Image 1 (spheres, rainbow, N blue to C red):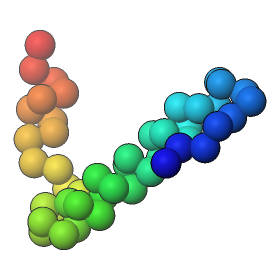
Image 2: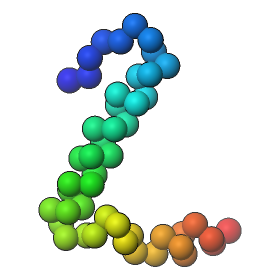
Image 3: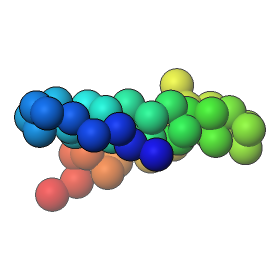
Length: 47
């Protein structure tokens, strides 16, 4: 549940941070190694 906020410009921070933490712990649970993503350089440099 996301709390109501008076200042809507801060709303993305309230939404993004829990999602990033969820992704991090999900990667740890799946032994994916979030510190060393596979094929990151290939996907970033390919145009």
